[in-house]
Image (cartoon, rainbow, N blue to C red; front, side, top):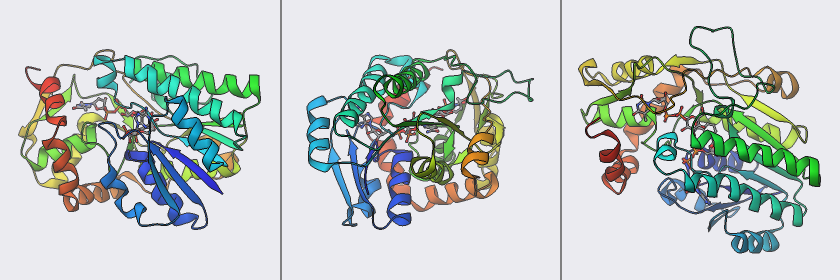
Length: 339
Ligand code: NAD
Ligand code: DAU
């Protein structure tokens, strides 16, 4: 079995590469990644030592590069993680989100169609469902919840999902889609809430909480997301969408307080800053379908996962210190100075 993993030098894609090399030692894994600001080859250093793993630098929206690769490799399965993934950046510069997330998906599907790929899997997000009211704790996103997006990021992911379903219906492309809630764990880029708060707390820097801090996210340990995708690409039904989540809703301020406590820091570091434009209030996934149909359940609870994550950031300081001392610092200054 030969699998193309796009975006494998990023957070979730790299965790997926490691899970697959470990769980399926007879599979060949090829990673295609453009190495944008969010991609990091150091993350794949261990994978590079495995003869079953190959890295290719390239853009999923570059038709020639993608078609050449498909011609050469004859993939059985394609799993598309490659994306511009940060909501705040999509508010600043939407265009690249449309190019990568929509046009890139189209190019990958055109190649999958031409070269007879047996499964095209699109890694999507719960953000395509918009948000839920805070006070309606009885409501959850199911696969039937209408698409209703808020940010250029979520709109681009929703557009890609619609295109994936259209390629299935119109051309018979064997597709599946997964829509997961917020992930956390190793190799998470420090622009996102949890790693940003860990890095700032360790450096005794302010912890910038948007708005009132009461927005709710439904956190899932990254390995659980990866194991769900592994199940879907093997046992999932073609043409279907699967929600992935572990019923672990927390307000942002609670998450920040948990991190502060674990690190023995002071809550005085918390600083309330200007809210994100169009900020989604609450996400909450109903994972009943993937549980009932594929038997998937998460295996890491938040208490265990956040400890593992914090320990990973403590043990891997060079990985994230290098990121926050580079070009990322300019983004941080733009985002958080005078806010
Ligand atoms: P990330 O930003 O950490 O990584 C994205 C990767 O894609 C990087 O390695 C980057 O270099 C690569 N990439 C970007 N543009 C590319 C292009 N044009 N061609 C090839 N490679 C390109 O993102 P992530 O958090 O790992 O998210 C991975 C996927 O999972 C995304 O599709 C995202 O929408 C989805 N998702 C993320 C979460 C989450 O909580 N992070 C939750 C649900 C779904
Ligand atoms: O739900 C899945 C989505 O989760 C994925 O599709 C996205 O790719 C991923 O980035 C994530 O989106 P969020 O916008 O939920 O994640 P982020 O880490 O950016 O923010 C989480 C919450 O924390 C959100 O309510 C905004 C808030 N926040 C974030 C940052 C970076 C802060 O309060 N302060 C911050 O500095």
